[in-house]
Length: 84
Image (tube, rainbow, N blue to C red; front, side, top):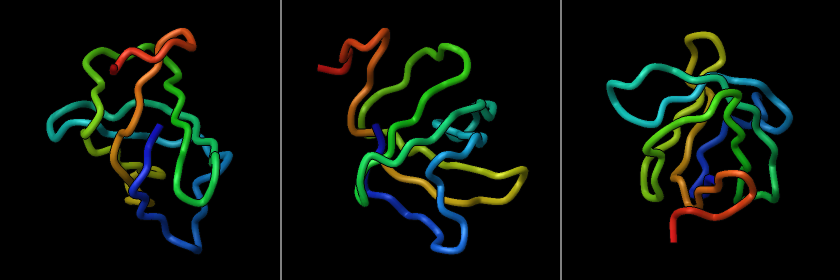
């Protein structure tokens, strides 16, 4: 889950398939975005990822255009929270 959102009003993130970056030098990964409420997004990876941690930035791109971001607040694998 991602909170502390920065989202452009002309490009809502909810329901979109986007590219995401979680570390400065990491490759972009495919994600699906679901808006839980005005403050929280659920971000689902299309392929499993390693070393995603709370407190990291999550930055979202449509093609090569920055469209939003936030801070990772909770991490789950197989519907089990793994960051606590």
